[in-house]
Amino acid sequence: MVREQYTTTTEGTHIQRPENQCVYKIGIYGWRKRCLYLFVLLLLIILLVNFALTIWILKVMWFSPTGMGHLRVTKDGLRLEGESEFLFPLYAKEIHSRVDSSLLLQSTQNVTVNARNSEGEVTGRLKVGPKMVEVQSQQFQINSKDGKTLFTVDEKEVVVGTDKLRVTGPEGALFEHSVETPLVRADPFQDLRLESPTRSLSMDAPKGVHIKAHAGKIEALSQMDIIFQSSDGMLVLDAETVCLPKLVQGTQSAAGNSQRLYEICVCPDGKLYLSVAGAGTTCHENSHICL
Image (cartoon, rainbow, N blue to C red; front, side):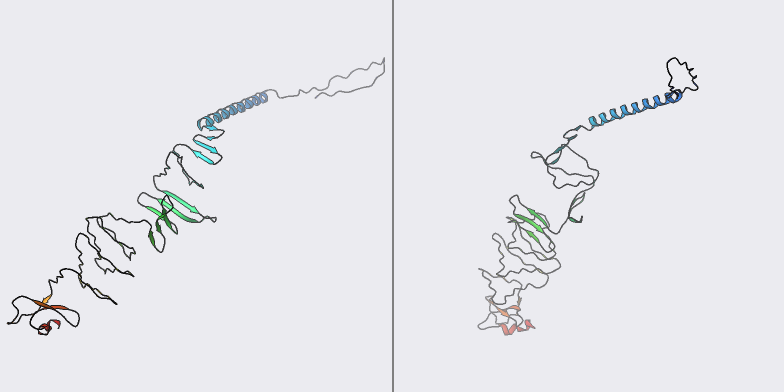
């Protein structure tokens, strides 16, 4: 640092100037200066490398003013072209494909779609796994393109809204509880079987039960009893021939009818048996069958 002194003199006066006592140089010199330049050069190199990496990332990731790569930002939301892989859950209000293509969701494990309320609780869930499809909701409903209900399931009942429910399995359909339907019909030229292997089979209707076989026969097989009961009406067997081949037949007397004519007798408990017809009734002669 240089010190300067100022002295006021008059004309003709000679003043001897003092000698410079100490002189200091301003700046950085020597090894400090070289280290500073080296540090500045290193910063410039790092800046250039960062700038080059930024340009490379922008080019590789296809950044543009409208989005990144196949991802485009539009006024309606995000538009993603091609196939994409999500490593974590995806939250969206609506997901749909283009008009000319289908929407495909696939995963190596399972695909799960959850619906949550404002508190974050799951109110509905659709889970597609490798072995089954699981739906968790208060009600599951399938509608047609016209809005007609085709299939509905809830905790109380299952409703099939189509005009016809067709079961094509070789073993038919198994119901553990009751089934309510206006019509049960087999395919043309196929047999219809209603079977209960270990329990009873009951058919109830408020106005009547109609069993028809237009091109075949009707068989009712049971290990125990088959009961036809009418509380207010009667049982009508309307046919050209009524055949009861296994009725118990009473013994024929020596003076019996050689024309093999029989009469049908009824026991007090409703049991039927045959008795050889005579000039009069012969049921009392074979009444021991009722015992």
